[in-house]
Length: 285
Length: 354
Image (cartoon, rainbow over all chains, first blue to last red; front, side):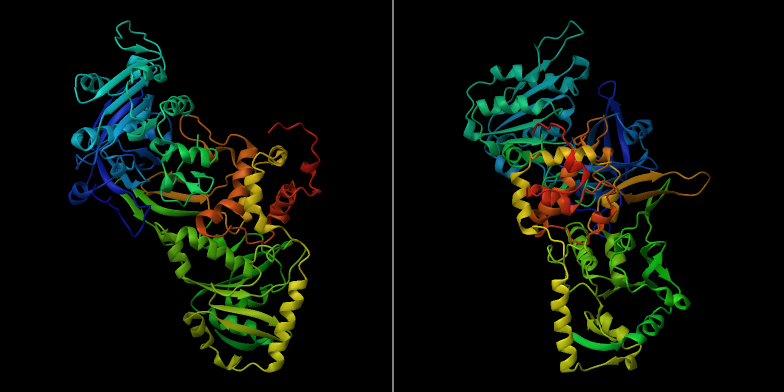
């Protein structure tokens, strides 16, 4: 992996001008944004790790952290899946293609890609957890020969709320990937996959070699406990169970204090944590 | 370090001579409190030398309670450093200088905060010795003496000040009025100073078991003291406002009416406030007062040490004189040690399940 870029070193809070290239809805309240830095040189040289996040500014509305959904293996454009849920996102949803926004980053530790190379990768997604995990999934697919088995378990509330639904159904057709989908409830009557929470997909995962497996988890806060239980049952080592967490952040660079947990800052030392971190530091999940 | 001697009666003239063309900030009496305030050369007599602690710590000059980070226009964000001025800040006691050194560890490393760094670089620090009252804990926190972090430091010694020159810029200040300073100290001065140090060390009445705190906080993570204190806590955030090392802040954009550019404002925040860990969508990672208080105190007395080498409490005693319900570094650490504490929350008889 190439080392990440650092924008605006003289003022770490200064948003870099960027434009919305494309924006379309993935679900009723989740929108997909393709963004490009206005400075073309910076746009092409911007490097990040899967699992890192960026701070996005909507002029006059404010700034918030968003995980990067695109993969560094496809440079030039940055992608985000954003739920309309607060002041900044509401303002962001009012913007059109070609609107100017501010962007700074990348921040956080990201996934330990180098350590994961050669290993099997088990990705467990709940709902909008697909946003950060899409980055690492696409990275694995773009560098398919660098990884062992790639398994995806994805649970959403209803079919309409499964973001990138078509992408995942396409993935099911691939032979070099195992993809299992589930919805809590099917209100369409046309759902052909599993019905139930994401943990009901675990029986479909066969013959795991736990010592050789990295499990990556992201989803709503309530999901972690149940998923971790399953992963521990599979004997995946604690330091190979990775999860990416959400916290309030106002700076992204360890200054504003909001994401402090115990002696770490989620923005600097996370947002990717291991299950050992969870046992070691209270209040993580 | 060079040490000179200044006659006490020359202090104000010296400060006055410095305040030409540069803002002088110094402690001034305001109602029953003392505050750091901008002083005009003709107001030099307003400076209050006999105070124990100011209402707000000097952090207000480096990270003001509210300041503009950027101007916001349709074209984007423009940095705004206009509030940062060349200043001389006089009257910092050792604990407050330690406070600034603690903030330095957060703000000048790993993505240095350009606003803080500039404000620090443009401000000269003139320290002043002090005498503890019953709330001073700096001896326990090992911040009662200061050996770095100032340009000049004035130690009161009878009719004189011993003036410690801590930097090249401090040396420049001396050269504005060299006639005020005696180069050599006599044996008597040294003896007097040693005696003063010893007496001052004896004068501390209040102590906490600072060294034990990191361990104790780990061991008593689920102690009922947190629930009890949490029940009493008003979640007013005063402790964070007055703490020299509380650095948390919020950021928000303001749109102004008319053609004026908007602005991105940064303002003090406190982890004791309800919204502190609230994320969009309504998930609040610290909805309970007890959990927010625990963050405050563990961060201050334990966790900051794990991250930056030493806990961040500098023992200034401001939380002791400020918290309306008696939750402070002293009452919390005493309670964790199992001591009886005369805070009203300690008398709560509520059943608390860990």
